[in-house]
Length: 362
Image 1 (cartoon, rainbow, N blue to C red):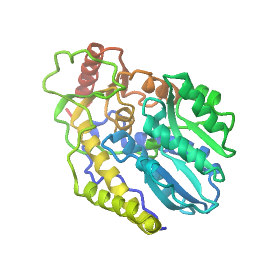
Image 2: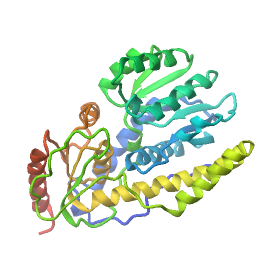
Image 3: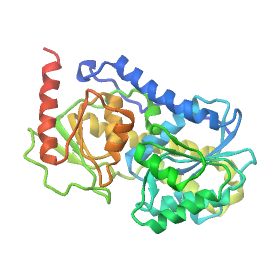
């Protein structure tokens, strides 16, 4: 199957004085994380292997699209590999594709290994149970189980596969992963870091943008404090229908009706998935870029702010996903502050804003 060249969203670069760190420093830091990913993953994927990438994020959450594009960026640095299948989570309701015996299965990274997002866990366990003769690599995840019974079921599934490799993105998940899986478990940076340095996509219009969760991982239900001038408060899970989404749904319906044609359709699907992910990443980068400073409790808002050099304040979600990740990789050094409450975050955002203004053009 044909290969996609990796590209970041079509965006224009803002004045470099808008960044706390220079483009060179940001690029160097991003390359360091990408190199770590390659150090861990490259030995696991034999030269010339066919690969199948499962669990495309066919929904509006920007962070998961950033991960997908980071995974594509990784694959673009391995031109010896060829992608033979791409599927979203919906494939769990239908027959899984037949794959070459030498195919290596890659499962999308993220924060859904556990029982908080059960449809993704159901797909993961179905893949591991079905493809017992294939090497399966779970790309970097955070792990969170609320119910010990579900964790036990996951452990049984993992232990039943002879060649399953588990990658996790923080030390807490590493400890949990080693309890769940007796086989190889690795600490690895989030795949979105393979995107490398990203420029701001729009001029900064607000002193502060609060990109705050509205889903089941949200922890802060306090009202946002009195803002510093105009403040945008938003989440990034809402999106308008696009032509790319419409075409993707048509192709997926054709695949369900004519499953034997799947191998022909994978090239089309991969391009559509790539375009959908790019559109969503662009939307997220636009939101973050519109603020001189960002307050967020989303891990990938933190990662994208780090890659774009946007000063920001992080609040944790309900199982310390961001704090655990930063403890492992020290992301956002010099441009990121942590807070426990929105009031504290607002104060720290004001400090960053004032510092930002002082460091700007005179």
